[in-house]
Image (spheres, rainbow, N blue to C red):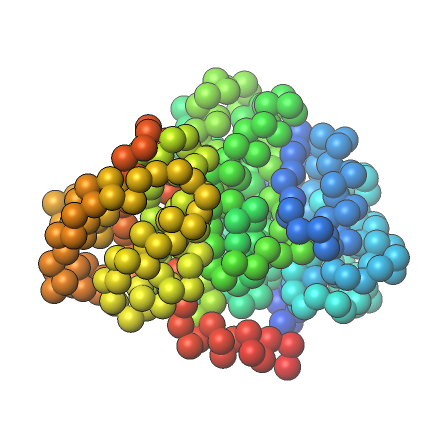
Length: 383
């Protein structure tokens, strides 16, 4: 098994009907969640920001096709009703059902459809690759591929599925992530570990600079594998979240290339992350990558507006990695070989490294190129 159903105690099911899908996941244990920073939070976010304080989840119900966002009091009532539907389908306490929605903003949920779908797939809950695939496909919107990750630790595992393709920006994007571990982890440690992992993964992805109303990542620890070293768990969780985040960036709407931007030599890690996110979020950088144009000046210019102090004439920038890395700027001096640099941009993954020469902080952010396909998808999203 490739992901969540490899975790002892996790069962999944899913169904897809056109743009409308529904996923059920049953797994009981200690739980934590991180949520969108958008002030216009969707109803399921409002509901779960309160309910996750219980520190436990028994399962998840997630729908696609309708975000249940900007839907007022009715939206909040519908989110609670959806939790009740999940409770009946999963056979767990309604207060411990995680609710998530994704799709068009400003529309009301079709609760009869959701109840019919939940009832129809409840009997199919299983610990199998097919069941997991059905669940992963059910939550996709403009995604072209399912997203799974599994990290094996010493005697335990961490795994997750997620969706996300557009409306992706720092502080999470239009993404739903459901992550599981069989490690026994106390709730305060689980929460802290998830927040740190999200900061170093989901919060470093930029597709288009828009932060969604519906972002959520739930983490549940079933405890079947017993206690593990906290540091080992944190590393495995971060590796899992990073793998999912990279898949989101690579599947950006209309994308043809993954951009990986590593910034080193920053005053602090968060400074490096800020610069890296600014660069991968720049439309000028994104379009240059799409056109395989080694316009290094756009990268330096984007770094310069990120709000981090450094000497622009002390920076070094390269494209590619390892022995194949091509220097563009070395300590402020232009050394670019345009033909080699352009060749380094020909693949479906373009890697940059920027050394600010201002400290020891380093971080990586991920994004994708900006193509006509992005405009085509979003120009007709609701029609």
